[in-house]
Length: 325
Image 1 (cartoon, helix red, strand yellow):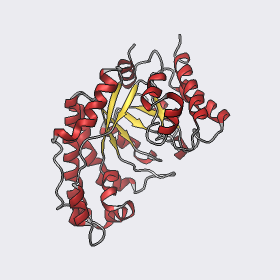
Image 2 (tube, helix red, strand yellow; image 1 turned 180 degrees about the vertical axis):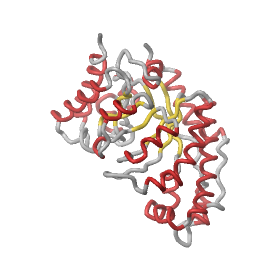
Image 3 (cartoon, one colour; image 1 turned 90 degrees about the horizontal axis):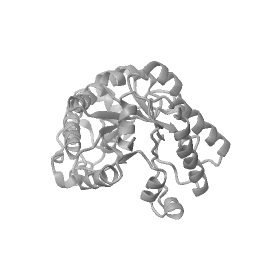
Image 4 (cartoon, helix red, strand yellow; image 1 turned 60 degrees about the vertical axis):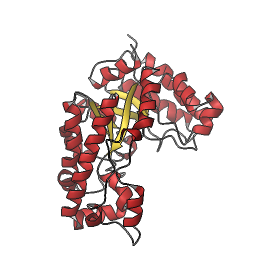
């Protein structure tokens, strides 16, 4: 079974011939990857990664407009709703995505997904997260206008990525802290959910897959995530109180988890016995499907070459063994 087919089978709730694997190792670990394998590409090829995370495309707001709007202080939602937005249909901005599709999908047969903006996380860059949380209480009408424009921009971005040939639209929107949401569930249902639906419904109408990245503990809105139609959720952060076994038992027929290797507690700390035990536990849970094995986020630069090799040698070997008849 080819990698792209393997990942699709898991998302469609079939048992794989082996657990699909990937890891967010680029950027922070480039020197380690060069030292150990020659390049990040060579590392991914060595471990026969099944899928790939693509970045690129236009930014929603022109840099110069943001600089001008923030010259006298912070940007408030009433100011943001008048800011110009870039053209998401400018195909020249998608060159990195096109190259990534060709490299991973075209040349290596991998399943490719592209990161696209959500609502809250995306606009934290404009407002600052502390201000943004305050604005949810003080500027509801203006925020709704800003969110509605962002949602439509996101939809068009997603459609363009599908036109280019990506397999999945990956919406990145951090909502959780270590113990719960950053805002109330009522706020999420009122101010976040409707604007995510713009993209999820459009992607599903195209017959494509849509996934969500949200860090932290989002237990309070799992039913909402299901209702939005996400096929995949990343990272399902167990170090923040998210239970993988519980997800598989209750929601395994609704969406699959992309994750399993926690960068906050497990890899990069020199605790090889713990690392081995966690990799084995998670991969065995995914033996019958429901799991796209991946890191919970970018592996941090305190991870050594020896530990990275130890981890992915084990992942490579066990991802095949746990599914063997």
